[in-house]
Amino acid sequence: MAFALSTYPVVFRAKFNKNGGWTAGEYLEKPHKNAVEEASLPESERSTLEESRNLYDDMPFVTYTTQYGLSCFEGLKAMPQKGGGLALFRPDQNASRFKRSMEGLYMPGFPEEDFITACVETVKRNAALGFSPVYDKEWEKNSFMTADAVYLRPFSAAEGGIGVNLSREPWVVMINTPVSAYFSSGNADAVVTERIRATPKGTGWIKASSNYVISALAKHEAQKAGFMECIYLDATERNYIEEGSSCNIFFYLKSGELVTPELGDTILPGITRKSLIELARDRGVNVSERKISIEEALSETKECFVSGTAAGATPIESLTYKGKKAPFEKIGALTADLRDSLKGIQYGTIPDTKNWMVTVR
Image 1 (cartoon, one colour):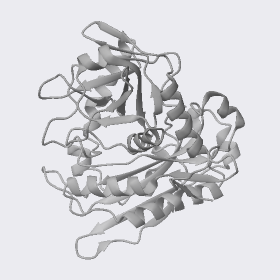
Image 2 (cartoon, rainbow, N blue to C red; image 1 turned 30 degrees about the vertical axis):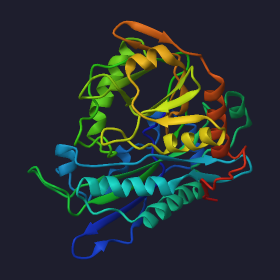
Image 3 (cartoon, rainbow, N blue to C red; image 1 turned 90 degrees about the vertical axis):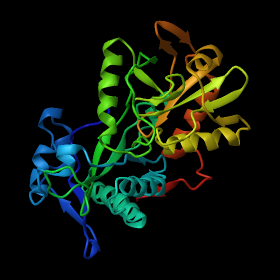
Image 4 (cartoon, rainbow, N blue to C red; image 1 turned 90 degrees about the horizontal axis):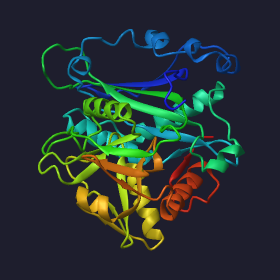
């Protein structure tokens, strides 16, 4: 299923007014079929964003967002718990990054507490209507790599405008959708793309919608060539690895050092990335956030994985650069340990000693 266009009925929306600040926010509910009935329908017949249009009738179509991509978004999950209920993974981190992204685009930042409240409430209200996944013990057999979850997509939408300009009175909208595995099984190979994701002094550190145009093109090209993922090099020297199409990347070297590219204005500060660094250091692993050249990665890596909300910690089996292919361990011991620990915390099979999970119900 991966990401699905079907959206759950309850949607959150807030608006900024330069004279009065942010509205308290509202929870809108679109018409929907019984959850059991809808789940039995073919994907093409389920509720879609098109059917939700009535919720946004008072929002303009020609805006700085639709014309110029002036928008930012977040992505986070609520996971069904082994003991019952649903829990969000580190929504405070998404709230902080969303506020930074909006301010980085010179929009008024959305309050972090309001963001967290909206996350909890949209998931809770949709679950009350029967729209939520149920924990399945079968997921444990493949380390939750095909497990279902609720995906939350908060995003900004600009006011009406046709000229190139900034958004001073944006909306914030939050939808919920079903989601499962992001990467398809059977292929875990990556290739270095010739495309450039972000440039210094640009918006690479912001979760800006416009950043993902290049990602979509590069990933399409990689998949067409038979790869699962593409990897970017830096824009200046074209020598240092930065990240994947929509995920951060880690290299576990033969020396025992776990390396992930250092953050800067061209790399998105991933929340899963941050969490995996902490889990690795808890295990006594020497974790470095530093530059890593493509040659070092090809010659010195024994395990490689990408990380993100959708990716979790997904192993990469090989990396190809200019026709040269470097194979890595299929699922290395450290990669598997970090993946299983992360997923275990998220789905409630491992105690959450870090207080990362926020209970929804």
